[in-house]
Image (cartoon, rainbow, N blue to C red; front, side, top):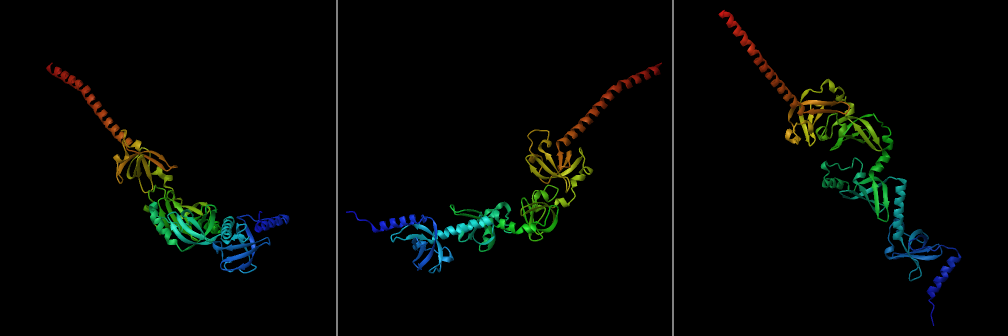
Length: 406
């Protein structure tokens, strides 16, 4: 005789009753709401909408949020369904999963709203800073730091970058959530985005062509940063420091220098400036100083495989292309001169609009050869003339002698 399991029978009747009442039965993984029936240190029991009794116990009684710390009868809370029915016929629930989901939902809401929030820096690595947002670990990449916190290190030494980043551990930065992926447990925040948001009103008062005055705060291989007015910072690219060619901005400007610059571009929160545009372009009047064909003295500033960069004066630099260094093939610039040499060059081209001036050693050498050839030719002509005139003189002398005899 087969015995019927009372528990199975009760469960079947319960499900049948729910179906007749058109009640939606929760599934594993669903988040349900319930009212606290009883609470102890070991478990919390909930009334799930009158259709079931749920229990949260053991490791699932995880205090994910302060709202679970002091629960009392009648409190409404959310929990995640772990099992539809346990050994006691109760719905097994978890605060841990529900709290975890709630946190990620709140993070997604922060991303969508663009809200600015303070976060504490917990750790640093060579790529950026680790933060905590609603108990979830997030990452603040170096590229997303504001200019004030960006670790500007000469040569990009990663160990020195890490050393600078570690100085921020324990500090609080204002950030915005910019990327989130719950499945990969990925949370990316940006201090720069938050700063841009707060700086919109300040930046809006600036326009192209405005002249600002400030102090150089950093010098890099690609230019210099200037701080001005309301703690604003802009970049002066190496090409905008001066009209002449600059190899290393550190040779031209240093931290602490007070300078004036004109705004040439505004891109979001980025302001780009130029110092050279406040100085008259010396190339406008270059033809008053230099002419094509003129021989000039120049100092070799840099040697590249394609030629010599030469300083004619403080403002005008020229290039002696490798093809203009010798009439012999295969000659390398490094074999012709060294940095610091002062050499005579011939100007072969001037392009004021493009700020280009071409120099040549070959043309100068050809000129010398031409002069030599011209002198040699004159000498030959003179000697020939002398030879041609000599017989005539001898003839005249003979005629004179004949007259004397007579």
